[in-house]
Length: 435
Image: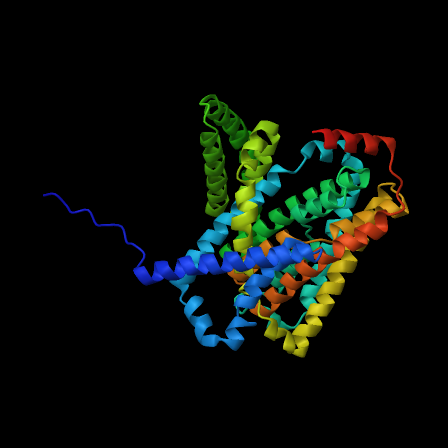
């Protein structure tokens, strides 16, 4: 007897209409406010996040609650559609970030970058964990333990944002200075450590914070790193060589996106963050040479101009500025911002001095590594999703990400104004301008 094939469930007319309106309104607001932010000398990230904040509970939900409930309903199925598109954007964004990590630079400047990275991660991590144990219990999600929350705050304070830092250095014509190269290399190591710690933390929350589960999580992390280096890399090289012979650039691009998604699925299957898989895949693509990286760069424009702003606007929807009206939350936010700035700046400065750099270069490195932007927002979103953060804590961390990103350019400008340009730096800049 032949069985009838059940049709795939489809999105209803009203749900589809609402989804398309959400995408259109959020993206339009993010692009317009991103352009305004650039005109004001701010990172576009500030405007893109502001789009979500304005359309979220802080403003739109406060002054036009009926319209807000219609456009952005609390219905989980409807919002999951928007979240899925935003998640695709963040996975591709993180992969592009990983693909632009120069491992050769890290090896060449290994000693200095080692000192800077160790100090600029360990000091903020330690102070952040200590801060997490001191913050009010009302800022901890009911499902999270104090220890898990403290470790998460430590990770959030310790990270830097390589995409924001690289863009800032490029705009200020510092990327090809020696100090710029050291900042980028140290930020790359900081990013790697941050994603690894986040994955261990995420897996611990999902599986439980028992000693056996923690050991298992670390084992899964080591396995993921080994698979990326020993299996994914040679496999990716062979597959990309074959796709490039097809003479159709679109095939190679699609293949790279497939690898990113499958890598993200792999770490998700290990109960770690899918972001880690996408990030590792980006590093693998970078290690295969400039040709593979250029293939990935063909989607960079679409990701940076469309998917990334949509993700940041969606992240901004979770921000509720009204929580800052509570004195305890406002005080916690101010203290968190101060600890984040001082710890990262001091860590970068101390590491640079231990690496035998001068006072001016050490100041510049501390200032540059302070920008947290994209990375901290992704981490904050993950913390909210896995049940570590409350809306109030999420709002604090997002505001720290924005504040430190806005502070980075003027601090860098001040720190580098007296650092002389060497002949090697001038030659490197001429080579860059000629390419």
